[in-house]
Amino acid sequence: MQCLFLQDLSFVLLVLLPWTVAGKFTVIGPQQPVIAMVGEEAIFPCHLSPQMDAQDMDVTWFYGESLELVHQYKERQDYLNHQRQEYKGRTEFLRDDISTGSVALKLHHIRPSDEGKYWCLFESSKTYGEAEYQVYVAGKGSAPHIYAVNDENKRHRLVCTSTGWYPEPEVLWRKNQETLLPQDTTIKKEENGLFSVETSITVSMNSIVNVSCFIGNPLLRQKLEASFSLSDDLSQNNPPGIVIWIVTGVLVIAVILILIFVIWKLKKGKGVNKEDPVSYASVKVENEFGVNNDEDDVFRDEPDLQTAQKYRVDVTFDADTARPFLLPGMDGKSSHSSSHQNKHRGPQGLEPLYCVLGKERFTSGKYYWEVQIEDKMKWILGLCNDSVMRKGRCEIIPATEFWTISLKKGNQYWAKSRPPTRLHLRVPPKVVGIFLDYEAGCISFYNVTDDTHIYTFQDTFREALRLFMYSDPLFP
Image 1 (tube, rainbow, N blue to C red):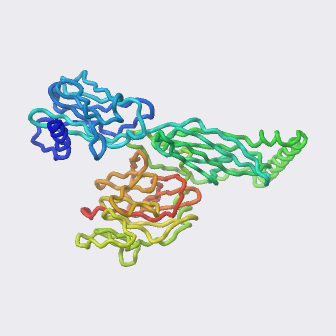
Image 2: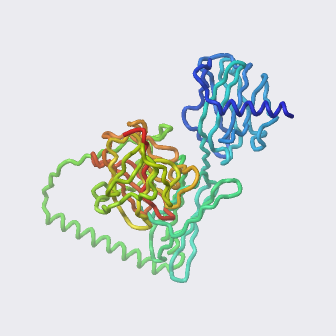
Image 3: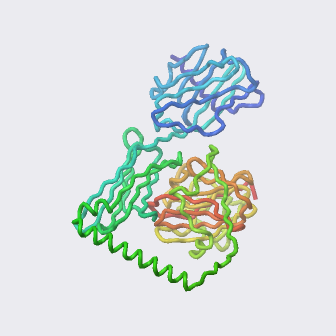
């Protein structure tokens, strides 16, 4: 037993120790995050560079920060004595090309708990190497179903339900192409780790409209739709004569409006006004997997910059939340870096370094403000929930508690969505404009330098939001 314990401990120590350039090979794993579908199988390839025979090497896969053993190949055979219980019977080692240093792990029956970081470790008698990669789990739920419940006030309560989603789905209602805010949405995590959703809106029984419920997977950028026609329900609850009178009235009004428009056009004259041509430009957006996002996506409905600027307000940084190296300016409206700031932690301060929050808390309404980010080579900017973690490691959770965009390496712009979305900006922004429409669940970012739209998050907010900014002190 002691030998087995020391043997397993050696694997853990090998993973924790830094790999040096003195090794004779490099381990290369997936270069992009892997998306694994719930209930299906996923393949995680790893290979050696340069190519070499790995038949006599030990190959091991670990999961998570605790380095849980997923699968081990040792002495030319699978060695599963210490495999974690949740992986038993679900792993398969693919070694057809092991003579050239190329192998893969196939994981069957994907579960939500399989999401996270993995390590692939090769070890020979002389050296070792490892590769790290990220796995995201996605589940596309069942088709939404809408049913109506009548109340005593002559109103319809429309309820839309769906199950089997992962991660937590996005919800949206539309009525005659108009976006509606749900009155009540419940998203529940089931025992199998998947999410079910029930959302509802209330409309008048006298309405003759088509209502649609959209439920989407933010990771796959896919959505399912269910439609409900109130005109059908109205015909079932009213005598045919009343329906005929209503339809006739609508047609008469439509004819009158058309006649008024025609008369107005005739009075205006036969000439055609020549207007200056209007050109439109958009920012090219693609996610980490190279998939272009649909600009007509139902979850994208942002105003133009000029409209957003009508809601301009002053937003100030809160000194009590400032972390070392990122300090509020003298007027509280800007931030700068310092390498000599002490380690003081405000009573409401976030735990990670270089972060600062805005003083204002937004719970309703529309707001617009601008943040100067010129001369900064690395930053994260946007909004976050007021209740983000204040102890331990504060991890930025994309599109769940944080809605941010960022700059990396001085020229890589990203939207912190799931998965992260690469942004291609024509002009580097010196000032970023942020527009918030709380009720509509809309957060839009603008490049004020060239008056262009950068990115829009669409979500349902359930608590107060605050301005969030992060800056790296190693850069100006």
